[in-house]
Length: 153
Image (cartoon, rainbow, N blue to C red; front, side):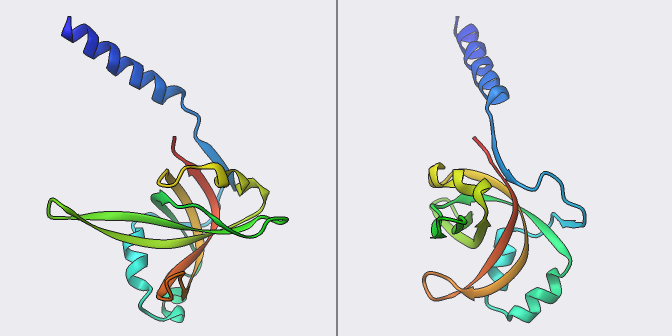
């Protein structure tokens, strides 16, 4: 009986995952060099460097990043321009997490649905044009222009 219940629960989770609709916005295709090895952690470390150094290292490339979304801060509601923190964590031992963050800039009505996405939702983004600028806390941070985003439900 326990096996049947366990199999039924696993089957339900598998079906729910198969029919879940991920939300997508932005470009549906990209033609150019895509860097897959650089993570949010790597870019957060680059924030302490110079803007010209990050420009030289990333010129002509787009980056695919996986992380957690924060609530966007909208600067222009009519044209929908917003910035949101995008983060990932790394465990230190068994009880501490070190958080790394970059910031995503969204432009266009395609991204308006992000206002309703719960904080902490996982997403995959394709970004380019990283720049270093002061973050909300005044410390240097890396900001990206979002080419596409898929929110993982």
